[in-house]
Every structure is written in C-alpha cells, then in structure tokens.
Image 1 (cartoon, rainbow, N blue to C red):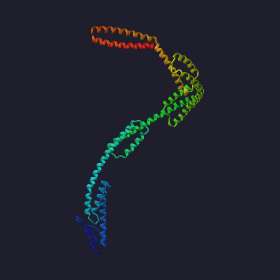
Image 2 (cartoon, rainbow, N blue to C red):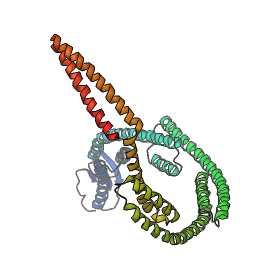
Image 3 (tube, rainbow, N blue to C red):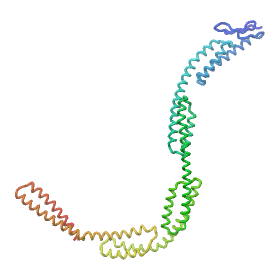
Image 4 (cartoon, rainbow, N blue to C red):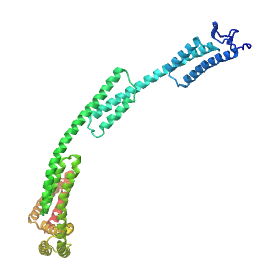
Length: 411
C-alpha cells in the first residue's frame, strides 16, 4: 500500500478507515480496505466540494433574490442535515457557519416580502373596491351596447389581482357579482321590451307602406305631398323594426315616395316650360311698372298701377324658380305707390289738420296769459318771478313754432 496522503481535515489509516476532523474530534466517515488511500481521500474531498458548492449557490441565489425566503430556509435545513453525518472531508464547521450566516438575510427577505404582500393586498383591496363600484355604476345605467364588455374586462382585471382576507374578498366579490347579475337581468329585460316594441313597429310600418304605395300614383300634388309628410312623421314615431327587416321596410316605403315625387317633379317641369311664356310677359309688364319709380305724380302712378295690376294677374303663373324674383320686383312698385298715397293722405288728413289748428289756438292763448303776467311782474320789480315767466314764455313760443310747422305740412 502506498503512503497515505495528508489533508488538514482528515486522514486514511493503514486499515483503510477514512476519518474527518470536526470540532468534537475525528469522525469515521467510511472505509477503503485494500484500496489506494489517495483515491479514498480524493472521493471524500469531492463530496465536501459538492456540499460547499451547494452552500455557495444558495448564498448567491439568496443575494440575487432568485429564491424565496421559504425555499431558502428549506434548502438551508436540507444542507444542514446533510452536514450532520456528512461522509465528506473538509471544513464542515465552516459550512455550518456559512449556513448560520444566511438566516438573518432570510429573515430580512421574509419581512420585506411580508411588507410587499401587505402593500399588494392594500392595492388589491383598493382596486377591487373600485371594480365593485364601477360594476355597480354600470348595473345602474343603461349602457346596453358596451356595458357587458366593460363588465367582462372588470372580471378579467379582478382575476389578475391577489386575494384579500376571506371576509374582505367575499364582501367585495358579492358586490361585484350582484352588480353583474343585476345588469344582466336589466339588459335582458330591456332587449325583451325592445323586441316587443320592434315587432309592434314592424306592424305599424307595414300599414304605412300600404298607404304610401296607394298614394304613389296620385296626381293631386299638393294634398298628397302633405299626406306623405304625415306618413313620414308616423314612420319616425313608430320606432325601429327588427334589424333583419328594417332596411327592407324602409326601401319599400321610400320607393313609394320616390315614385310619387318623381312623377310630381316631371309634371312640374312640364308646367314650368309652359309657364316660361307667362314669365316673359310679366318681365315686359315689370319694365313698364318700374318706370313709375320714383313716384313723382301719385295720381298718375295710381291710375297706371290699376291697369298694370290687372295685366299682371292675367299673365298667369310663372315657373316656381322665378316666382320669388318677379313677385319681389312687382311688390316693390306696389309698395312705393302705397307709401306715396299714404304720405299724401297724412298731409291732407282733415282731422289731423283740425287738431293742429286747435293746438295753435291753445298755445297762443297760453302765451298771451304768460305775457300779461310777465308785464305785471316787471312792473312790480319782481325779478325772480319775471325770470321764471320769461323761460315759460320762451318754451311755449318754441312749441307754437313747431305746431305751425306741422299745420303747414297738412295744408
């Protein structure tokens, strides 16, 4: 047998027994009878290195935060148990010391995670409370189109959040779930009512279509156009029919209207062509009428207007597109003659002239009275009263001048 190799942490004796040195003395860790002691020692050193590597990896993972405190504690316990009767040669006590040194870090990380979990739970409670409140708002509203999608999105958000305490989680979930149930029931009821209303609208619109189609061949353009307006009002009041028939119903209703109004437009176009001759006659009459402006001789203008007005009516209808222009021009002449006539009447109105004469008489008598009083006051030397009477006299004289001017307008 070759000479035994040396190792500060163990030995192999002549009988092949392998020992490791511990703080309590040597401990038999194996036997290698008849074998090479160097190979035996190498085997047990490698086992120690394996344990050392495990401790090193655990230290690195804990430092890097890649292992949870609970998993780290389990790993420490596992390695510590392996070290108790480890069949390995090396400084086993140092590994125990290193494992002991990990405990404060594990405790610190456990406390940190506890704080983080508490914060996440608080955030989750806030989020779940908001989700419940949002769901209750949706349940109380009438957003039938997108409300269901919003509730589904809230449910997905809820599922992604961590659980709270059982009582808190159950309470908020009950609020959220009840809101969803309430919304679903109300939405179902709403669409049930809508379905009933749509079916009723379908019946009404089918009747309106029958009426519209019956009117489509009418040639009573004015009254029938009014009836179509009434039918359109009823159509809008009826509401929407089921979606699969609404468009079909509208196309039939619109087709009946189009048939009538197309026929009316064609008839009106024919009339417009016929009325164009009348328009040319009225343009000639207008030229004659507009020569009366401005009015210089009212009697002559009134006499001429009577003839012009008769010929204007006799000329007949004009195209619809020209009515506004031609009527506007002839009415302008008519108004000018009326205004000129009214102006003369106002000036020669006997009643107004009489009122002006009466006013002049009253003012003259009042002026004479004030003048007499002014003479007396001046004779007495009452300067203040004389001054007041002088102002009164001047005021009444000014009114007298205006009354005389008005009388002149009536003469």
